[in-house]
Image (tube, rainbow, N blue to C red; front, side, top):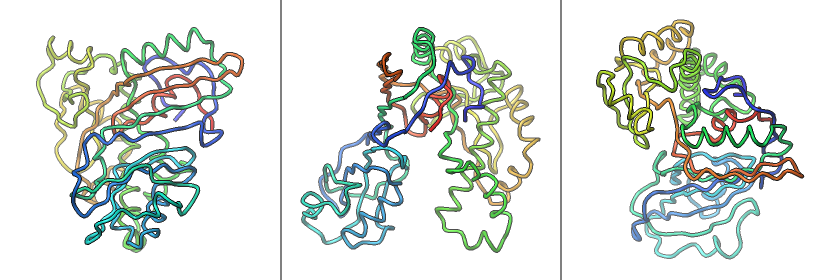
Length: 344
């Protein structure tokens, strides 16, 4: 991640992240109100130093249901203190499981609130995530750091996929190509693992295309042939580049769409299409794998806008406390690497 180019120049220094779980706090923002009735118990859970799949297994076991009956909106970091929502399908149950609130099964997780709801929680159902992150051993000059933060606040940041997409050792892409192209090993994959590998391949291509746009000075200004994605929405439209679209792009009302590779005709054309094709030409093994497995083409915005970005500088400890809210699908690590070289 630290090697990916940023639109505002190289990182301003170094910092350490996640030295302790409490250094990295995330609160999932649901974006809708529970129905108050139904067979799904919607719970807000705080977890510490465990993955979301581990949390799902633990919660399901505590109430005697299968993990498949547990829904979630997004995955949360392991080395962190995080709050996220889960839904538990419990047909016929009319009362809240008292053990959730009286004696948690594990000190690693606890239920903060619970409501009945009428449907299973699906991936992507949340509005976004609110972060509070402590960066330690910061070497950047405070004035330069605050100036860069102001630019990020006003102009957004390159919407790279974060390191989480590529595995703890950064080898998900290599594993994906090795396993997905072996019919016998691919057949044994769980649905979750298959999805993880396909996502890693698409994320790798997206990051490469976005990096090429930044290197070609096509991040601040759109390219002829771009397609347009509405800020905060997956909606997109295709119209020829004109002065009005340039103004909307500059305001952050719309962003340039970059493909998530798969089968289907890409909607961009002209210079935007040529740039993407030049990157994909060097990644034929990845593109062939995605197309052979019938992955469908999608779009993702090139830029993300931080909301409620606040920072607190602690000069004596050389620490920076950062608070920010990001829309779903955007990674805090993508914002941080445009400030500092991050080490965990």
